[in-house]
Image (cartoon, rainbow, N blue to C red):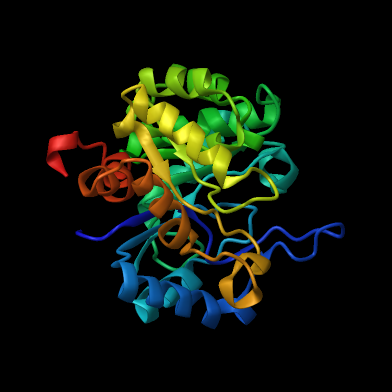
Length: 297
């Protein structure tokens, strides 16, 4: 695979609630999503999207297969559970062992009777500085399932918080740190936490690039450069986390391509060469997904 990878996106999901009815990427938006990906393949060589919509998030594996085929961009589908607010009823009555079995079964037989098998676990969520009881169960189950099946695991750390606690819980459940991506760290203005995660061997996801209402790209760039300067380029993942139709470019948003059109030129202007950009956008996400060493990708 020679082109760049978007390490954390959503192509089909439904997180809508009464207070937030627009957190949807549904059938009505399928053409727009497909067209954006196809255009990015043509202009930037986009090769792969890691799609982290899991159980309880309105996952649609059949839609992912359709978008992938029509856009020409490979898509990795996911399984797992998001943070507690979006847990389906199955979580409340199940222990970690039972939840692990659910994930292993999906990994081995496919998602939602489609035959589409997930290639990653995520985005497995918590909110706050530490997972609550239900989130600890789903994180533990996800880590055990990942270790048992050889998949990697991506987390949702609400506003970037709690990532170190997530990593401790996941590794205690038997998952090596290099198979973990800790999510939304570009929303946490704490270079020390980013360095600690990277030094422990986990991937540090700067995966909400362009979401200026949460964090400015100026701050994201500063945090990224700090982590690169600390010698942790091999532990960075980048993406935009398009998670509602208003983020689509055709709807006036920055779209899936903001990383390539806007943010990476700023990284280049700060001194990054082609090899570093390739590391950040291609080799790192492939290493995360496969568990490979740097020289193997």
